[in-house]
Image (cartoon, rainbow, N blue to C red; front, side, top):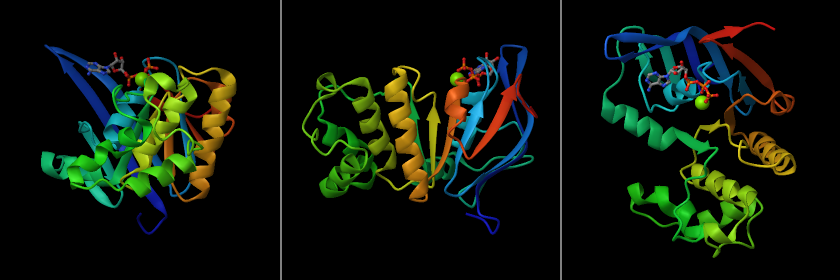
Length: 228
Ligand SMILES: Nc1ncnc2c1ncn2[C@@H]1O[C@H](COP(=O)(O)OP(=O)(O)OP(=O)(O)O)[C@@H](O)[C@H]1O
Ligand SMILES: [Mg+2]
């Protein structure tokens, strides 16, 4: 976190993809800051640049212009990005990701799925994994495999897995796209509760109703943030 209480600061952030000789300007210079302990929703239609934004904040990809700071570390400073090693370290230590597909490993139990990111630290921390499953309401499902869980339960496991390394920022890309509206609202309530515990969340969605539960909403379209 920097002195202003911002966990992420993006200024004039740009991303242009190159496909052969074609240039695709996915982000055309956007400015935003994520405040610690807040749920920010990035709202916009398909192709607006939501996943691109999350991938940059999540250190999965580098910007092509502007500046970006994540969890107090410079990712891009207007002309160049940090090394791949630094990017990997930032992602591992500071970022949690959840997606609309839950990407659980089918042969592992809920508990083992939550422990997967710990491979990098050479630890198992079963108590911490169990506590996190408890926190997301799955204390009674530790030994269940994904095919023995509902969609909402699978997303809760994915959420616990995203939190196991104590990230500064949770990035959620359409996390409720594959869930019914009742389950969607439960996941939203859970995310809200996690922000009250101090987690910073950036959630991408095209669902206006999800935005109603946010602390702040960024409206994106054609790679630009818009006032509404
Ligand atoms: N790896 C890539 N290479 C080339 N173009 C890309 C790449 N990823 C995204 N794009 C393009 O960048 C633009 C923004 O895409 P992005 O995936 O960020 O949109 P989105 O808001 O997440 O859309 P959706 O709601 O459909 O997931 C689109 O025009 C898309 O085609
Ligand atoms: Mg997307």
